[in-house]
Length: 402
Image (tube, rainbow, N blue to C red; front, side):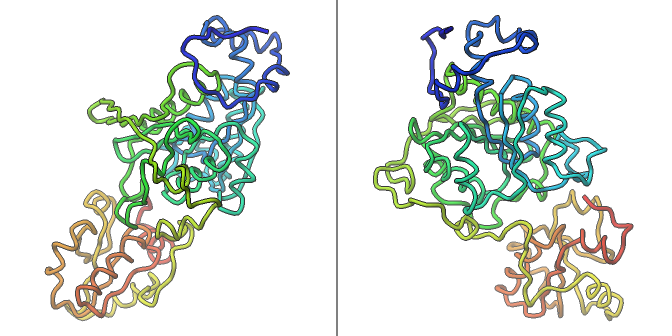
């Protein structure tokens, strides 16, 4: 059997017996010919790619370039985990989906596009949210996991599942103009918890839906993740184990940081205290994205509209806690803009307000604003549940969604 040059080798998660059982057809040899003539890949390397089983967590911004490039590279089996449907707001960056796919499950759209790129790729669908109840069962059947998620509970869940099962975790994250990429493999270096022992306080790090993301950025970071995955599968090159790459798209700069294994890490350290998956939403202090909990301070948009119609003078302040950029997209008549980040310093501007109704895009930031205002002494303060998105659905459809 062909052998790789022993120089520049790196750890590979592939079992050798599975690689030995793989052969390439004449059509595949033609398809992958630009790989086969490279000594770093060659016939044995392409067999490794075909033998590989890779799990992609998410088919959104990062998952789009990952799915397309790994399929094109010849990865034999791609597992996709997602439970969302394609939305118009996805199309600015999630290039695996098209306008015709709006409203379709992302898994079906992604599989269709992947098979169009490479019909030799076997695509396995997991139409579910990754949870503590199913993560080990799903991850166990794959050689390598690539994290394309956008929230902290799932990142910690993916990390812990990979550590417990001994799988490499190719990590990426994006926000606005910046991205991160690394490889966490506890058997050979640090894990995600070594870098981030504790999650940030809830609400401190805005989501992409709140803060935005440059549409090109997930393509760049996703390609970096795909590059790392292919290197690991080939067993060649220097992977990002023990290194974190920070990318600044606005300045086109890369910075590299060395990462060390934390001897006190609760899951990959010598005296670990985590031996099973936990409740990661509780650990991160956040609620599941699909279920923002109702509180006694919530008002339906229809009730807000009624109160606004019947208000008398300045007896009611309608408080918009979104960013100035969101304010320019759309706003409710008569609202006062104080972004949530500025509210602690500007809370005095609301002194004497008999009643306050706060709103944002979806109701999450305004719920935090209600907590802050009540802590500051305001008692008649409410949150418009569902935010301006629900207002557009139930009160005024001329207000654009974003």
